[in-house]
Image (cartoon, rainbow, N blue to C red):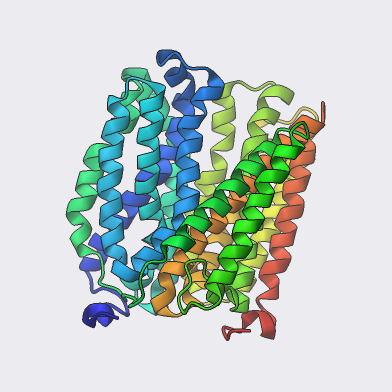
Length: 461
């Protein structure tokens, strides 16, 4: 590793720490906010670019797909060249791509710009958690992760409001143009980011290609499966490609000291349990996020504005709980905090699934708050464990797996909702919420297993 690798091995001094967290916060805000506001603008974009709704979906899909397939390769590259360098490159790419999105005059050009923007976002998200590990002293890492979770929740909650505000006074192009000055500011203050460990191995290009093929085929197959059983042959081929590439990738990684697909980290019991817990929890969350708007509008006949307001208490509760949970994570086991959080989350989801036939707004709001509190209590401690249970020089692999687990869970949750809605003419929303409750309970059990001697061990199996 490089000579400067240990300069910031146990946190940055104040006030440089604040500048580094400002950089991380701005980058994460842009990456999260851009995904949220693009969804709101899709109908307007489709209309003005003369595209069908199905075609316009690729404005969102292209971004998400690129992020998923490039997270692990970019986190591995961060271990080699430095996390701060990858982060700054990501900020630059994101800013240039945002400008390209704003200048697009066709759907093809916009989708191409969104692919580039996805690469920038993936640079940011692949190493942001690894950077937090080196920004804060080990005894305060939970605090830093809690702040990051707070920023993510705030950006997600503000997304629809920001999009509506921009579209009410300007064209859709400004939804992307607003990122340009933010990217520039973030890049200018990125000099405060910490120096970190640098690995001595070379980047594994064949493994990166196999990783992209595996996750790409899996996500496309899950998406097609979610649309029903009419194309099972195509789905089987896509899953087959994912399995073949996955087996090939795993075999290639077994002999490597710092594998791109972090098999070495998955051999650590508490890390593996945290990854599985994360996938289940985010799957449950996405099941609810996708289902509830349909339930509120189609079953309870609430307006779009009312739906947005009734959904807001969830992220607001998370905003308040996440920083507190981060501080608690520095004092109490994540298995305990995560298990309690998932139990509360499951209770909230179950209460939403069995709402009375004609609930008041208050009946809905308190249930949303319970869900937000439960998820907020779980998320920061779980992320802290994923980062601190691994060697410092493998923080990039842990950070990449953290993001990959989240996106994998969200993809699976979305596909399950689509499949339920396709199979059930009525009652699909309740079934989806019950399924979300079951996934949250599975996450609770997995989290609690980390309290056992085998689960809490940080030694390799």
